[in-house]
Image (cartoon, rainbow, N blue to C red; front, side):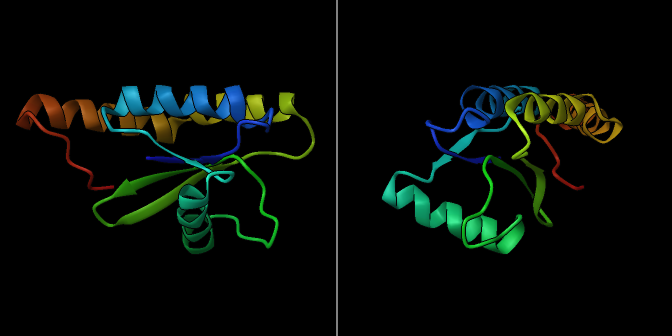
Length: 120
């Protein structure tokens, strides 16, 4: 999974970084942080957002992506309305039926095979 962010962004640090850490932990996948203020990471962040996310010349951050065997799924973009709105949207993502089912599928896959199956 990847989180496109910047440390100066209050929507990103800490809300999206904490959510990314939780998602990585619950799904048992590594977390890749793509800081738009670090040149090498900025290029990859721009590519990720352009190909899979909410692209604009001056795109919103944070953006969160999950990578499956079938491709990349964009699962979140922050909100410009205010940090509380972004926090609520992250909480909604983490409590959504889609996310709960994904965590359950990964846990079931691990218990049956000893490794995760990213089939979604």
